[in-house]
Image (cartoon, rainbow, N blue to C red; front, side, top):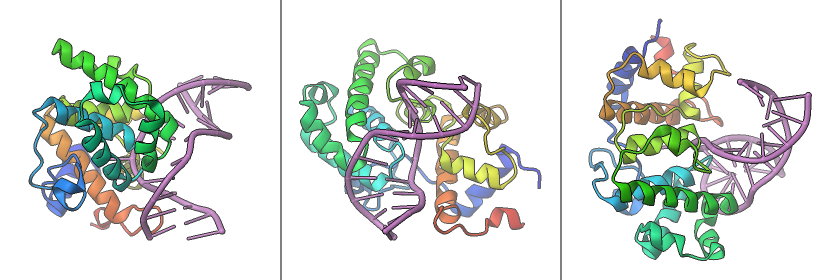
Length: 222
DNA sequence: AACCAGGACGTGA
DNA sequence: TCACGTCATGGT
């Protein structure tokens, strides 16, 4: 089987159907994810929530992030100015369940400053500028650009790597940018397509590529 | 009781 | 550039 981005997408879509992704809070979705009812964040608070979640979920399960986002919603109403005025100790207590709380408290402040700039100037955020923010690496940057600001960029995460390796598409040590290019160079630059594609990869990985209990990939069989 | 979770950074070679 | 140690909590 010679895998291309388009073929892989068709197979995943057939297996799992539309995802309607960025996971928001259980309070809203009931299950941690809300397929079908994903609303693109049209408000500043919505965009900001995605930014916070993207940082908080680094190397951390979403259920932990979910708890933290509920606290941040209650305490700050997803207002960057209010978050920036919270004493560091208190912010760290709020985000403790998401792990790395000392690092992430700083990262959240940095991304908040960046966010305020973007919203104030009402300009489209640039990827290279976003990557300069402390605590924002390639995956976090692409998640923010794709899900908060609707820019056509592709998110590569650990799940995506695992799938591409097992399918024989990628080398184990392939760079982030090379994998991102593999998708972006042969697909239409469509925001919803990229959002759905990443969501489908996560769905597939959760089903078959969990490290504890890996199962045979149905994509490889046929 | 280990092992893992949708990474990123600082350091040294 | 790149490999490696570090950061930290909660779930399984």
